[in-house]
Length: 210
Image (tube, rainbow, N blue to C red; front, side, top):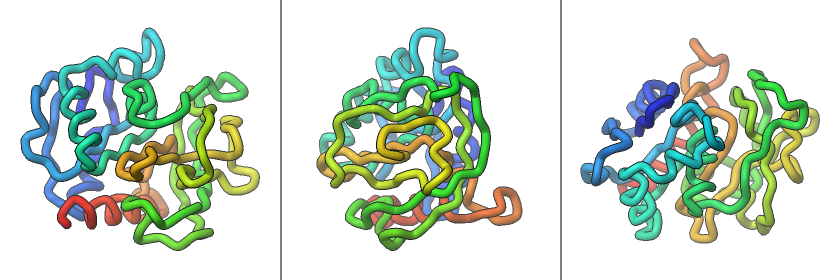
């Protein structure tokens, strides 16, 4: 999916292509063209001029994404995509500016908290995933039950100050997930040094084709 300002859509399609057939969606599309899963990628939708994700939430395609999610379809939001899904009310919480108010790009370690979601069904509880993060507004804050926390930053890796080290959450039904680090940039060891991010796409594909 691409909004004006999205910059990680090509990498998201590359990641999806390793587990399924990607379909490019534009923010003005009125439907989802029959896809079995939706990835809302990272970037700076509408320049983040108002608040990250707050304008993109009203793009025409989001009405279809909301209906798709309510029907149980798997939806993955990455970085700005996570912010958009929170703004759309599909995920709990909000993303605040990093604790030091600076844009940070670094590799982080994440600990898998549960394998009861489609996205982490290929992982093990306690497993460490090495995935890059790059954002300035990624400090998670919200009232979220532990059962909906999917990923936490490992000790010493919570650079943005997220509440309780939360890096990724799901909705109550478990079919919508958002995370600030970028799994689509960790699908090939030749370019990212890690292919740990591919596990989330593999898990999502299992549900999408079921």
